[in-house]
Image (cartoon, rainbow, N blue to C red; front, side):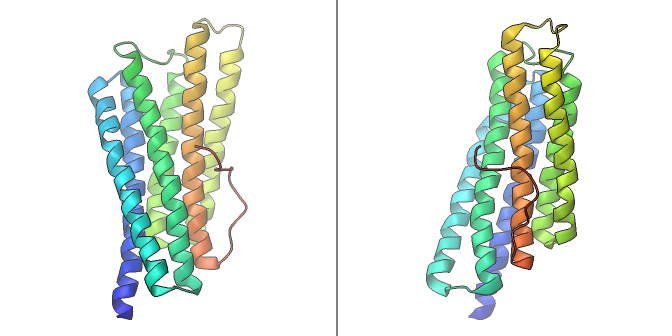
Length: 222
């Protein structure tokens, strides 16, 4: 009976890791669609978002069933609670990738971004996918040291996000207000994606240590 219970806990963590991997893949494809004005790839990301949502629903259902039927305590309770909260963050990561893909679809066949800012988004996309992959591995390994190191990559994302504003506000910006608005919103999507990946890592630290680390950005908004 207890063996089956711990198998269920392991399955919960595994499903969360799978969900995080899906969110990372969604952002990778969304970034390619954004930079390449690839309508088919954008549509794929949009269509696949329901898979992430469905997985989150399944995880929550299983987690609440464990709380109700097994009354977990100590580390087991931390695992269940961390999975519930982390699944919410991962779903938001998927939603943010969805927003990027929808922007690419909305402007098709034109490119959303001015050429001057495309390199920034290529790098932001790379960092976002790297963070999602790291978070996926951290969920599987419960590696606290790796979880804490994610802050460095998140700082790099924050630096890029801040620098975008200097580019947009520069008097040499020649791409108009609509392009500036698109750039601002998309930059925010990537910055939030990174924050949620860090939040997932923080939940892993909580599972292992029993304490919630104080690093990283706020994740109160999507």
